[in-house]
Length: 188
Image (cartoon, rainbow, N blue to C red; front, top):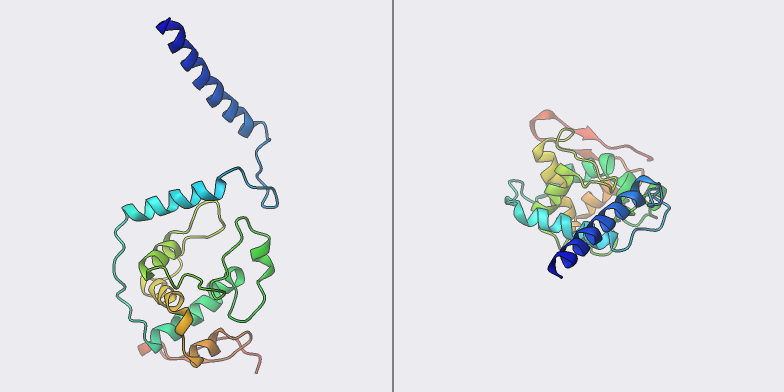
């Protein structure tokens, strides 16, 4: 009796594993961004990301959320992030609607202002698999990643000058420390 039960469990497990494998390799699983998601796909992905991040040590930001860093973060955000995540008071970029999952609009609603800057830093630096969010750790310096992280953590309380950098088509001269000023694109 016990032997039949064990054989039944083993056969059941093999059928589930084999059926799942067949589902994916036969092309039945949704792979296009326009396809409906798998059941529980968002929930599982979110739980996995959150569990992974909980295992990491989130360092405190070495970059203060002062005007200079927020201005630099705004310039970087506009150049590197706005294409997918949008700008304040602008319609969502069309690319974000064609992605799955859709890119979060980081200046709409609370964005990520309720997340610690360390979590946003981790996301920007490492990216998130299967979402379209790339890793910027080899593209931006760690200071630049922190500047964008501080901008997003403080997006609900940024100054008018920082909003000016983020304004669609604006030109703003941003002090960059000892390296001289840099300029954002203009429509003026």
